[in-house]
Length: 144
Image (cartoon, rainbow, N blue to C red; front, side):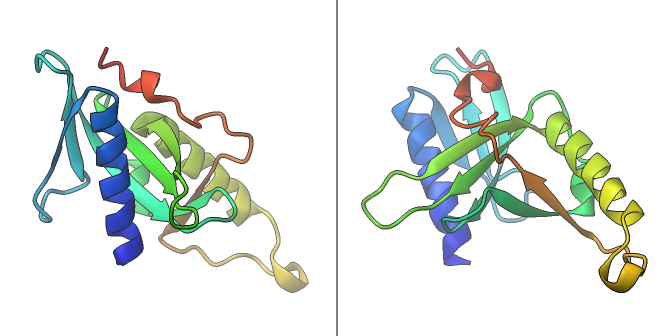
């Protein structure tokens, strides 16, 4: 729980540092943790934050993320580091996340598991960015 909250505050701080207005939503707002807009409020976006401690660039999502996307919804995947070190931020359009997790989960289901057995479907999905395609891609928010 504290890991997630740390990521949300880190993402909001970074958005603010970049001259954007970032506001936390209420906890009952489905799928959006931060509402962000440019300084004159002429452009805005919703941000879903997913956070993990350092390590591999893999974040867990629920199958709902396959269908929950729009042109103004983005994910900010946060990879926390040791205290005093700036986290890594991966900014990804929600449509890209939905496409990635749908395809990768289908491939996983089609591959044999241990002992050649078929994988059992679960609601969990994984988003990965091992090559850093989305690392620091704040421009994708299109709020400038």
